[in-house]
Image 1 (cartoon, rainbow, N blue to C red):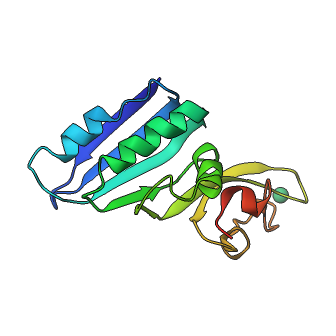
Image 2 (image 1 turned 45 degrees about the horizontal axis):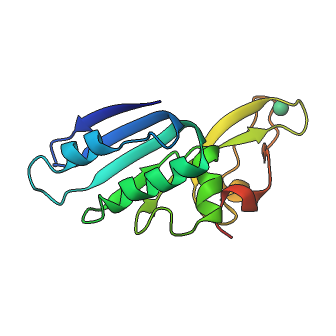
Length: 151
Ligand SMILES: [Zn+2]
């Protein structure tokens, strides 16, 4: 079950937050409808930080959703670990969408604190954009970079 939160900005772009679990029942119809309201080809910004999991059939449903928005400029932001790891395995998953950032788990090697932090979705960003822990230590990605980021 997923939740959609849609907001149309003055510049004509549509901002959508999708959260929850993506499975075979995923239907992005409400978003496609909202994006096509004016017959525009405007930008669609999709916030994916709240996607907790995506099943293998959900991947297919998500891919169809993205391809049905293909005429538009799609920007994905704060992509969750569940989605990011699918993107690295299936390069075509998001078609021509621009993946701006991924919200990934970081851990502190000194005190063990953990937090989610958004970094640009590109190789080495986990090092170049690593957050600082409250204790002053630079945090490290909790997982392998190639699991979440393009290489
Ligand atoms: Zn720390």
